Image (cartoon, rainbow, N blue to C red; front, side, top):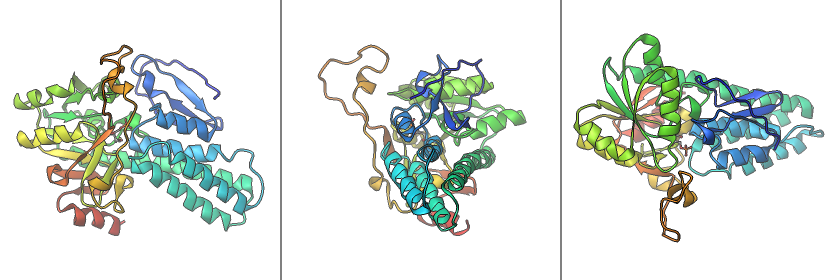
Amino acid sequence: MSKESQREQKQVLHSLRWEDEALSLLDQRLLPEETVYLRLTTPQDVWEAIRELKVRGAPAIGIAAAYGVVLGLSGLEGAPSAWESEVKRHADYLATSRPTAVNLFWALDRMKARAKALAESGLSAAEATQALLDEAKTIHAEDEATNRLIGEHALTLFRDGMGVLTHCNAGGLATAKYGTALAPFYLALEQGIHLKVFADETRPVLQGARLTAFELQQAGVDVTLICDNMAGHVMSKGWVQAVIVGTDRVAANGDVANKIGTYSVAVLAKAHNIPFYVACPLSTIDLSTPTGADIPIEERHPDEVAAGFGKRTAPEGVAIYNPAFDITPNELVTAIITEKGIVTAPYADSLRKLFEDA
Ligand code: MRU
């Protein structure tokens, strides 16, 4: 991989950008200490970046994968049928990088569908590659616009002075810009509405501490970092009036897959009578997956749990279970906030309707 490190002044950072015929991608594993942009030039680079969490968050990995397909086409010549099968080959490969976030498969399906249409258009390989790059750029640009709409809808649920708890990172770093669950915090800031955000640190890889606390602090949002096991205490103090999280996949019945620990937060919210909101684009809603039990849950390396802080924190040889996500059952979800508005139970109907009206 050709790597180009650029260290920048701290500011609200972009997660990824198409630049000089390559994907410039912020290495999120190094945050908050270092700001390093990687220059990715092959589908393999992108696959590895997704797998190793250099880029993470459902929408961001979908966007990265779309660009990854384009990277596989550089210098390609020949008949449309040849490059269409190349697109399929790269897309199928990139789809093996992580299993849970449906945005990955959604973006790759969209690239394959575009390639199929282009194959029938009689364009040259170079023209078709440019058109596929345009498609990836469109997916990227749409995500930013979508998140702003999600933020506007979500902000209607919050009032000046409220405490809001979030888990993991569903912010600008996980998306093209703004994030999903964090979008209302950015919009509140723009509008002079004060929200006090509590960010769970999010064991084992600390997306809450390393990424959410970082990006909100950089932006000037009032954010307080807590360990995951402090959420109940903070709620019992009356400091939290709402919870908002992102998601990797919403099943047709409204069950929600999100970062491990989300389910515990939802149970705590229920016990304290606090609304539990989920924010996501329509591309995260998967009507072909009937329930949460049908969502594949990624399991990651035990070292994330046993040696995640640069030193061993568990005995050698101990059994470790490290699921990256959990399922929050729909009855714990107060509302799902999308770019098309806010939906509530019964989710089987309300989610389907979002697509019927599309
Ligand atoms: O393992 P990660 O960091 O990719 O998990 C990310 C999450 O769980 C996010 O909450 C989810 O992808 C939504 S991002 C808008």
